[in-house]
Image (cartoon, rainbow, N blue to C red; front, side, top):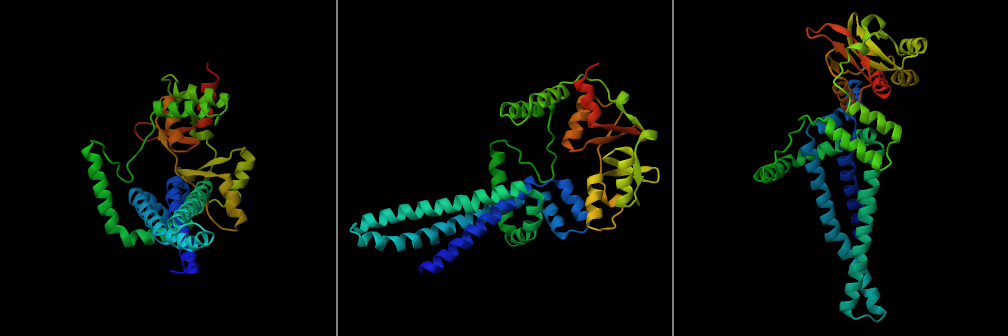
Length: 338
């Protein structure tokens, strides 16, 4: 194989490796609720990314297979071509044949390893983590096409790996299976974040107090139904913006007559108006968690944080709407004890 062909194949293999790395990190880092909103608005790429997240184990196996194939290709194609090109050069300057080949091989290995790490691993990983939803929607369609082709092989590989885990009494987590965070796990994350300097001492104090809150109930903090600020599901983006400006609320409950169907953030209304999209409030909204008046403050904070939500609806045991609770009210109560 000549040098130009080898370098072209090397470039293609590096790009392929970067593609699989970026696809892997994008599916892991992407926020599911954002992709769901984009898919609901008609984005086929977002729907493909969502489908990938729903069978994440299989997708990660596909990414690892692609990375392995590209890495093997670099070893088979790139290193011999570069070493074969460099060996005669070192031989002409007086090195013995064996020494010339050894030096050329080490240089080729170092060069290919460097390019593989930077172009094939680190750069695509950083891009995917910095823009997870964008990278997921861009990469999911071709990545899904690849996994469709190799799906039988991936299922075999997954079955073998799961079988090995069961031999050591480890239960593999199925795709879509819940992975809740306990207060103890959250407290460990808070402590590590503070130790690494990722959060300030004030934030650490608030979160710690939230996680060690007494079993007081949220009932006294519930905002009554009559005081809930919201818009009807058919409201326009401008209606959402006007209501937000008049009430100084950035998040509004979306109603279907007397039934709450979600919450809309004024930011999404501004984006819809800027894009000149006549999207009603119901399509801009996303669902919120539901709590009961007897939920403890600790459980409420944990639920809201796990759902990445700033508020939750509160319903009685028979399903009647009692009001809503906000994360700000919970944390303020924890920060300023009675």
